[in-house]
Amino acid sequence: MARPEKLRALLLSLLILVVLLAVWQIATQPVGGSAVVDDDYAKLVGAAAASGQKSAFPTPMDFGRKLVEQLSNPFYVNGPNDKGIGIQLAWSIGRVALGFSLAALVAIPLGFLIGMSRTVFDALDPFIQILKPISPLAWMPLALFTLKDSGISAIFVIFVCSIWPMLINTAFGVAAVRKEWLDVARTLEVKPLRRALLVILPAAAPTIMTGMRISIGIAWLVIVAAEMLVGGTGIGYFVWNEWNNLSISNILVAVLMIGVIGMLLDLCFARLQKAVTYRD
Image 1 (tube, helix red, strand yellow):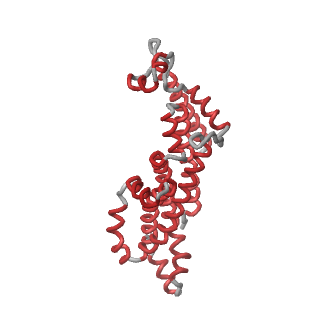
Image 2: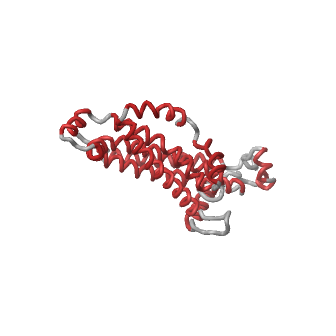
Image 3: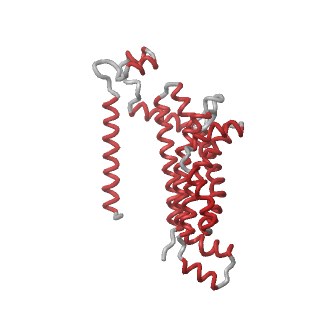
């Protein structure tokens, strides 16, 4: 993109942000001297919130102050149920990294096997088609029952949700490798392992990276819901705990951090994908 186009895109983004903040500010202003709070929420937060002069939902300034407060000391520990947002994010990222890595160790070799053998594909395809549509969270009760540990159960759920995009994309990429390249490798009597590493892997790498990029995005989505179910630590637990404390500002800070981390993870895999993209 040319520099003037980048500048116009940046200005448009800033304009959209200003409009959104203005709408947010207007929506949280008092109407007729009373708070903009529905009856059910007024009962939930108490009469003070309902009779005050501003909405129970934070204004942009309230949110900004809470964001600065959380980021100025993100690693505090005031007890088992009161930890900084940095600690909670670290727990979530660690679980995603471990579950995702385990899924990659299984999905990529198995995807190679499926892509290189029609017999293996036909044998495993019914199992894949049955298991793939199952929501990862549906496995959580079984994981808790068998593993007896909420943290390990969350990692298992990440493993389950991460494995399918990588497996399917790897198999597709391997099966799509040009037949001429494989024929040349066979003519040169290249052994199967060397052929897989030196011919098939470089050709299938962009498709494999696409699957990994999809998987990491799904894993980051699922960990928030999983941690809401199991509790203890993690950004999902942080969101649920702040809801129990009726701290909407902290929830919004957590939502922003979830989005930022998700964006950074996607950017990392996008760069890796670009780096391994095969060029004729």
